[in-house]
Amino acid sequence: MSWSERPLGRRGLLLGLLALGGCGFRPMYGEGSPARELQGRIAIGEVTRGETPDRMTYAYRDQLRRRLGEPSGAARYRLDTRLRVTSIGLAIAEDNATTRYNLTGIATFSLIVPGTAEPVLTGTVDSYSAYSATGSVYATRIAARDAERRIAEDLAERVITRIAAQADALPA
Image 1: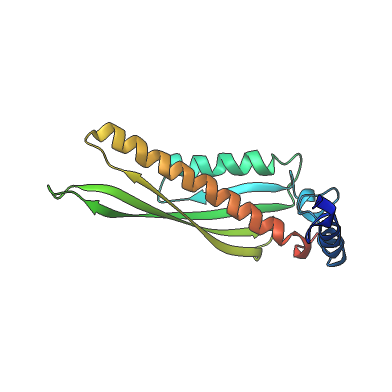
Image 2 (image 1 turned 180 degrees about the vertical axis):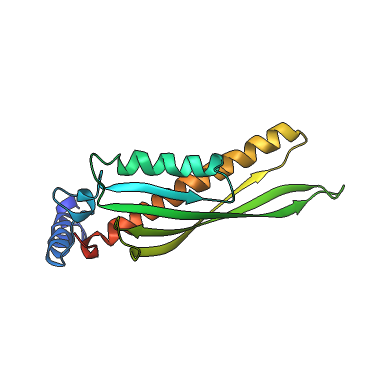
């Protein structure tokens, strides 16, 4: 049986592509798309997690900068975010020491037009990671920092995706 004779062969592929085109599907970051127009138009505003910035807030901001770009001139929007992370010890050894931790990160964000007080888009995203505690305090701390960095980068990606998905509805 040749490839074109199979039930979902070439014809099925072509029909699927035609159906996608007919339903209004278009790439999120395609040429001329609203999401692509946001590149370099969003200033990264306040990112808070406690009283002072820490490694996690820096990792979050850095990922946003890499993906959104730096605004050239006046930004169309400002993105403010509040980060929270909780840690739960899961695995407990015979000597009553916790050996496994699960982290949950939550980012609550607001996209604001500069000069106005009312956000044009708000939302909350979450992310999860874990790390193992070893016999070494140093190795455990490095593993915890790495888990927080992974959460920060994932939260930034999720916020960007949320904004890009709503780009059509944002005011110009």
